[in-house]
Image (cartoon, rainbow, N blue to C red; front, side):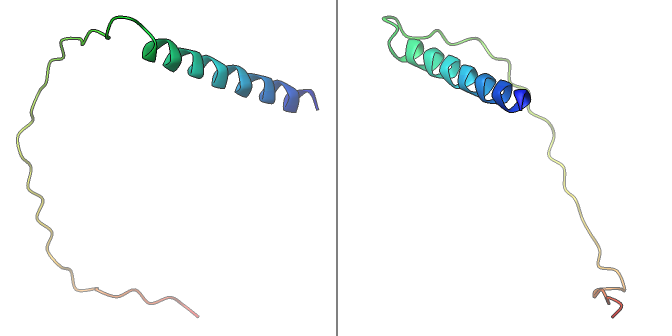
Length: 61
């Protein structure tokens, strides 16, 4: 029984904290600063699949 109460209290606290975080971000007087993000592009990969002999699966009855 106590685990259900603890779970409900933890969920409520997480919901309240998330709401407070989003609210403080939306109501802040200065806009959020964007961080410098380093972007890495990987080489293109092409996957080629060849059909095999078994194209259908038979299920035992």
